[in-house]
Length: 162
Image (tube, rainbow, N blue to C red):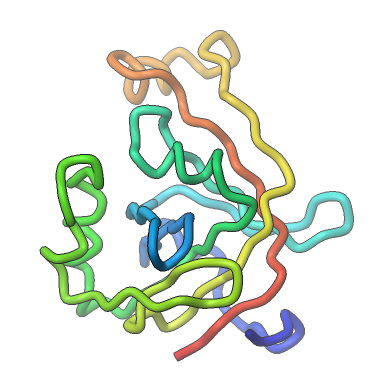
């Protein structure tokens, strides 16, 4: 695991353009899902990642049950694999087996060998979004049939590069 002083990335492209895989758990018991929403910044004088997970997602339970999570970023050649992990549920079977990704243990969690960059995060905050506080257009577009996301903030304690 590398020190954060060595990290040099374009934070505005990581989530929206490149997507990411969020993983929580240990190599023997974990789940991963593709995320397109996320934030990097500072909170309480800590370098943080903020991710958003709907309660209906299998990963939600893993996020609640674990102190750490990882956020991994991948070359474009793995876009199809990330699409699978964003559209299939870990409750329905081994969705990782449908991809070309290889699970890999890292300190405090799981990533995949194909990741170019994995941020290792210690969960420091959790909050369920409230529908009443979400703009009407966003509520209609994203929450007409499902409960709003849970916000998880993790302190970035290190990273791994391939």
